[in-house]
Image 1 (cartoon, rainbow, N blue to C red):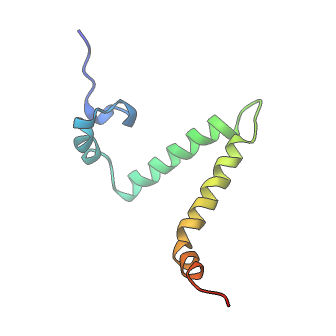
Image 2: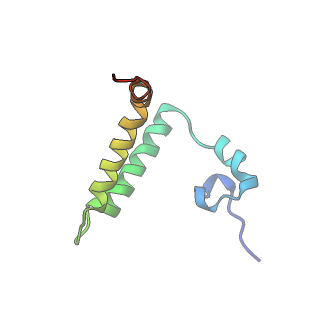
Length: 88
C-alpha cells in the first residue's frame, strides 16, 4: 500500500496535472513566502553549480544567458520598432 503524501508537501515535479490548481493555491504568496522561495532557489543553484570542487562554466553561463534573455525581452519593443524602419 503506497503512502499518500499531502499535495501541499509535494514538489512541483511530483504533482499530477489534476492536482496542480490545488497545489498552486496552497503556496505561500505573501512577501515572506516569495522571498523564501527565491532564497531556496538561490541556495539550490549556488550549491549545485557554483560551490563545487570541480566547477565549470555551466553555472556562470546560465546566469549570463538569463541576463541576455531578460534584457532582450525587456527591449523587444524597441528592437522591432527599429527593424521596421527603412534606411534609405
